[in-house]
Image 1 (tube, rainbow, N blue to C red):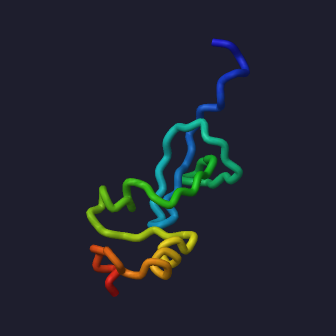
Image 2: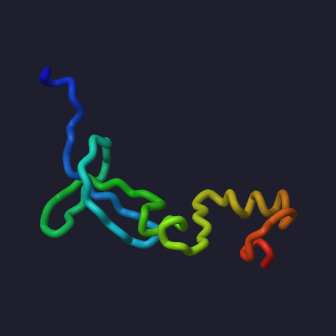
Length: 89
């Protein structure tokens, strides 16, 4: 393999901020933050959804809204055609 053309493949800590779940895997993703976890320093990637918080894997209905998109949608369309219990409140 040629030197200098491949990205840095290293261990990275992913942090699911919705439920404070952390896991370590290998990745080439570029990060700006580092964190010390179990005595070792890792590049940090913050994510909003992982397998620990995704409704498909947990079986729980949960709305993840970080930019106010759900409220904006509900103001515009109300509960017309909604089939979820949360929208009917």
